[in-house]
Image (cartoon, rainbow, N blue to C red; front, side, top):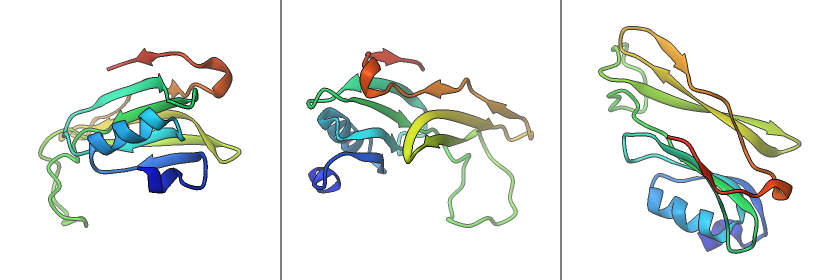
Length: 126
């Protein structure tokens, strides 16, 4: 993760592996670190990095059984998730996970405001 942060603080890092996300979060160089791979939601969790800055991590859940990088006109096989990130002045200020059910129901989870440098706290929701 050091390469992503070589130029100083960055707003968002997106990686596939949650272990890479943990490394980036531990440094505190990013406001938000997003990952996947686990096929279940983990977080969002806000921690204080080694540099004293807050970093929020989130592993978004499944793509609902998608196996290709393009749509084939098929229906979802299980719940799928997307994460909407809200930005202000180039920095992420909040996120919201949205669940899509195979039957067509769309359920937004609660909006999660990201901690700013002045309000560092360790918090977690699952």
